[in-house]
Image (cartoon, rainbow, N blue to C red; front, side):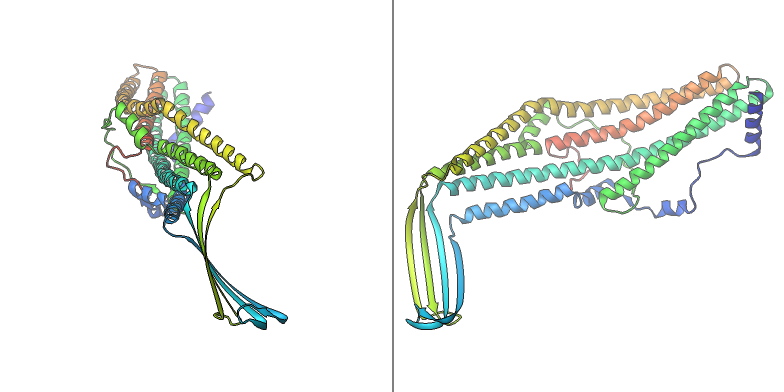
Length: 441
């Protein structure tokens, strides 16, 4: 024990306290690291998030489906075909009325459904599909924003924790110097230096861990916003979380009315209902008008003979080997599933919205409590340090004060960013920003 203590004391007198080594050029790398604000990160990430890009594509597809459903009430389907045939021996050509070795046929056909229940069902389905796609796009936007804010705040939190770990190392070094001086003077027992040396090592290990976590967080933020490398987050204001501008009842009403996931569920149910009606319309007759214009000749652009026709028909499917019944059954099952999902979400809305609302309220109150806890822990450590210097307390009390202060500071950092993430989660449920300091990409 005496030999180890002597080695520690000699090493402390002969060399400065070791710091965490940073590789050559680290300062240059730090200076060249891109810096982004929260709003810039949100804007960049929205264009790169795969789910959001997919949701935008689905909106475009649904818009075309809506246009097509409307067009069937005005425009007929039109088909144009041109056929040119070369025979090895002459054949009778209906266009020229004689034997020819070539034949050209041009045909244009227009078909219009005068009355079909399927058209009305498809119109309803396309409207519901568009609503579902738009709600899904909004949900993807809020989800992308939530993930981006999580990565952004992770960088800021690890920056603060890395700074606090550095302060913990500094406090441990100062306490170790004091303990060493008191041991050399005979005012303290030899184990005081060993206890504080262990605390110094623990604080250095924690500093290494926090700096490693910070590097990973910066790389993750870079990946989120489309930069191959680390990205620095510009600190946000440290003002305490504000009180929510809406009540819990208002938040529940907003979620049910315009919350993305609830809108998606309602639109999916309407779409499934429309599909079921479309399948059931196969039991009803369809009135169709068909116009045809045909030209025959031996030339590439036929003009020798022209035949035009118009046809009105009624079709009533009777039996197609059960395929119609199977399609109706599948559509009914899909409708029942969509209805069950929608009702389950609405039943769970009170619990889910309350959880998100209370999570922010609790995190906001926790910030105030943690701030008080840091003030108390800092004052307690100051008193314990003064008392230890004066020999009025033990090394265990000083170590306890150091650990409590480090834990209180770390808890305050975590609570601040937990409140911001809780707010983002609540906004994703109600489908709107509750404060104006962050844009929605």
